[in-house]
Image (tube, rainbow over all chains, first blue to last red; front, side, top):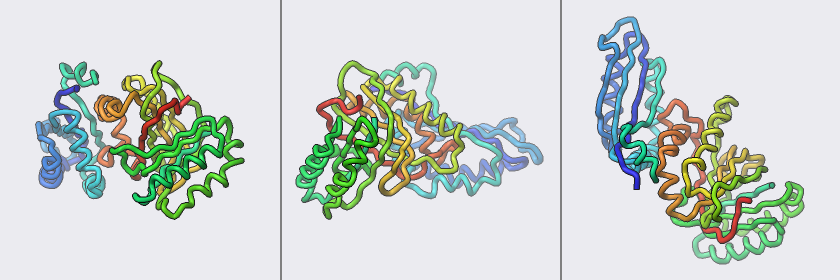
Length: 115
Length: 208
């Protein structure tokens, strides 16, 4: 069975002046539930590393789970939670645009695809 | 080909009887392919009995539709989800599958056409990467039945149950590419309603 850590990456462009509030809100409101679903917080990166008052920042938040099986288990815990999707709407005023992607280490790609 | 799927929720004590009734009803349709089987453990919102009929044309189905529908009015059948749709299957392996699987889903009605097309293109990628899929068909629903206005049916034959529960779930094409369309946390989400994920044993080719 394929194995290797799976990374979930939130890439968020904040509205001008909102980066610090976004990070604080994300860590206070979103992160505890994510940990309960089995995710480990790896990084919260702010670019550029200045709390702008009048410009957007790009915040890249990286989580990991130990395997694709763990990724599914995380998903199966989160999907029935009807508050999870709408939570992102509640912070819409802080966010200009965002993506969520799923990734793995380059060294693990062949193994992960060998199922 | 014109296909009909019905997923039947059936009172537990009546399943064997309803299975026999549904099989008789399916046989009476003279559909080219008939599959009426109990669903296997692991289905989600997938019913207790899966019925799949394939006709050469829609008119053949329409000529037997009323009689077949009458077989599904048994009071032990508590819910029916399903769809009617046209389309042809693709085979991606030399061997016949032993497990037939159907996914019914509803794309949000305000989704832009180019987004739907991209979603469909990505679904079509899956058989290229999941080598336990022996045949498949992606279809737009022409006539939805049940709890949701289903827009798509994505069906496959798998080598076996392990091929569905293992490679299909575990390949990155599923969890790193396709699933974002179903994930309410992803901005790309276009499928918010609960899907029907149903599968059963198949002793002969279903998708051909």
